[in-house]
Length: 301
Image (cartoon, rainbow, N blue to C red; front, side):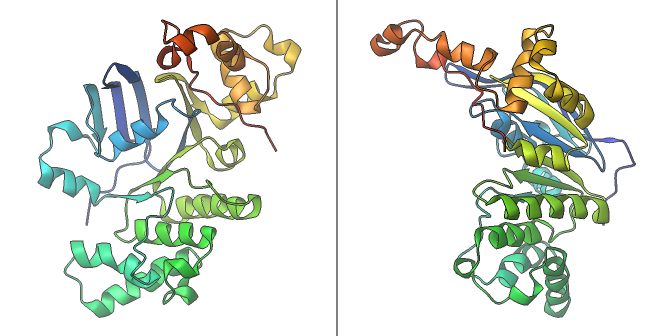
């Protein structure tokens, strides 16, 4: 049984994280601390670095500079055995669900337990039923992924992420590709599981409806830099400001507000409009690599 982190202890600590791919700086000195038992939403537009920071947190990518610590352990300093020990303490819901199509839902959920424990099959079967019941899929245990809707695949993926009773759940765009009703159901499931199981949830998304439904705290990235970390209410106050009130904000705050609201006008679109079209065509200094904005505004519902 893994040791449970005390309430309010930092279970994920990101310090001065730097990551480059070639000449492109993807993460530029990012800092973030995530406390035990909270739901942290990490948001930002396409290319902002939010998926890259998630890959660092699960140990799939290592930083060029800075550190990522889970449960106080620096992932970059662990060998493969040490990394695997840490990975058993968290679960991941991938954007696609990432289920094995040749296995039933029950077999998908059972696989991590079979691989990482010495439990008898009868006990494993009971554990699988418990996990599937948590996500409302116990009656669909014998179905295969191809027989499930998009929302049911997400639920099945979540049941598998819960298989080893993790202390942290990482979610990669949990609402992506779902209709509004199914998306709301997944949001409610995340909230319910966090409360019932006491897990720490880290959710990467650009869906504002979902973010404001599930978050305790929120973090916003733009072009690889952390613009703001705060409570849901702090972000909501920015979102609710009128256009006239927003004129007194800094450019950073106006950028955050535009993204949260999905407005068509603001620093994000101004940054895009400033791109020199001629230089783009000719590959000049203002070419695509240096000028395309990371944030893609979305239209609020």
